[in-house]
Image (cartoon, rainbow, N blue to C red; front, side, top):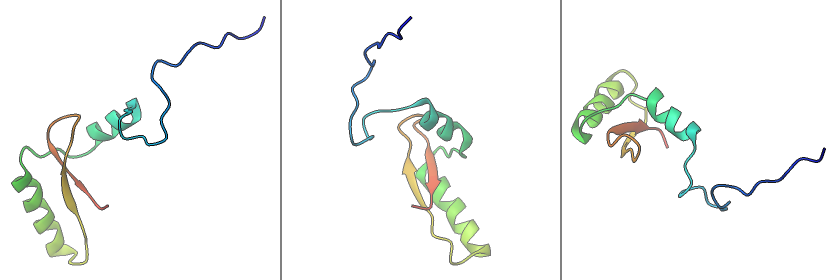
Length: 72
């Protein structure tokens, strides 16, 4: 019996910004979450004491509303 092709639930877009996946949500839960940007920046400062060449930044997560660290 031939396989039926069902329509996609979300439109396919070239830029992945608006589309969210379970993979992106799982990544959020695996990362350390900070309540405020200041707490995240303090963590960066303490990590840079042991590794001065470490380049990290903070960003606000749209999934959890908290702050995470990124090396990008």
